[in-house]
Amino acid sequence: MASSHQTRFVKICPAQSGAMNNEHDRVARAELARRIARLGEATFVEHDPPGFSALDDSAQKTLFIPASTIDLAMAR
Image 1 (cartoon, one colour):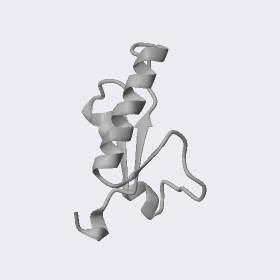
Image 2 (tube, rainbow, N blue to C red):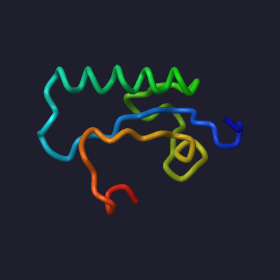
Image 3 (spheres, rainbow, N blue to C red):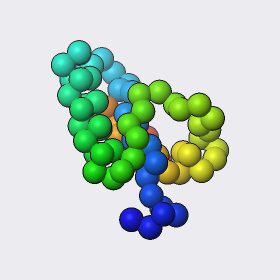
């Protein structure tokens, strides 16, 4: 990957509903996110890291993994 576009963080977006929100599903999603982060040489974070801002470069280099199915409006 080019360094200007490299993902620095992988984070799971919380589910909007209670569906798929039991302990087993949360653990399974977290493990998948850790593996994705490892493949991309990024860091899996469960919470925003210190200094993280949705308005700065950190958010642009974060891969957000939805915890449930999302529609186009939510994806934007």
